[in-house]
Image 1: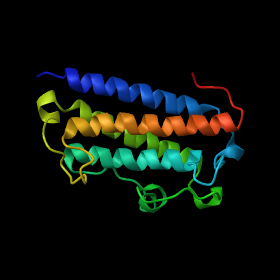
Image 2: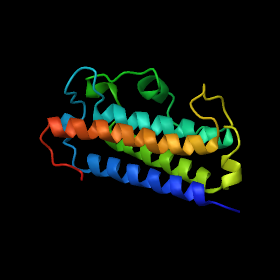
Image 3: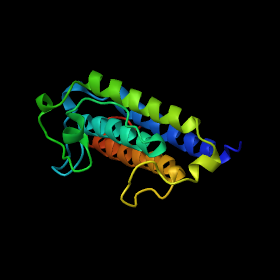
Image 4: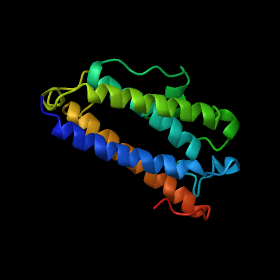
Length: 164
């Protein structure tokens, strides 16, 4: 069973994920909803959004979303927008717990797939976002990297040290 493509994509995913964790490690508690401009994503929304999208990306492999609280899709799903009030969100500890669990479930599901499995169509409708299961794995790495870059921009606006 060949797994070279899978393993390469998982390596890219792990790199992006490690940077996100580093970006959040020393994020000031009182600045979790800081937005340099009203259209920027803040840290609480970003971590919840990544948890929600990892649950969805997992379903691209096996048709089953990783379970999250019912409120998460409205708060963090594709059409959601960051709210500047921290009181409208779960705690950072809860968000990190779900972020880590969704990521771990996604990676575990990916590790069960061979390169031949990854060439198959996603198990759920993706609206053209993913043509096959390998796309889901690649897009997940890109997606986390995209949002990590946004977190780094927020960090810069707060004069926090670079994660690099």
